[in-house]
Amino acid sequence: MTMPAKVELTISASPEQLAEAIDKLTEAEKTTLFRVLIERFPFHLSDFE
Image 1 (cartoon, rainbow, N blue to C red):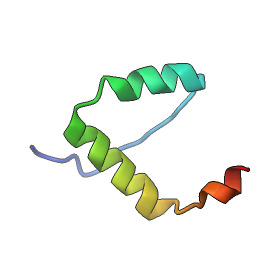
Image 2 (image 1 turned 180 degrees about the horizontal axis):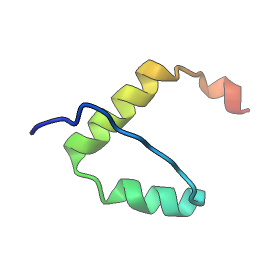
Image 3 (image 1 turned 90 degrees about the vertical axis):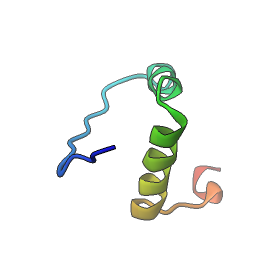
Image 4 (image 1 turned 180 degrees about the vertical axis):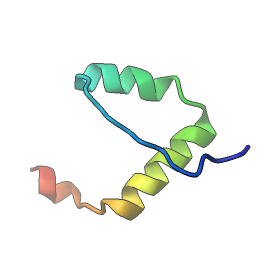
């Protein structure tokens, strides 16, 4: 699979709409998405308590 050189992402959706969109991704796409999010935006679950 060829990866694009630049990706712009704008999210203007409800949490439910975002969950539906994520459900439509392939497992490989989900893995890539979450790996990048975790690398770029590290957080701890305690941040959300």
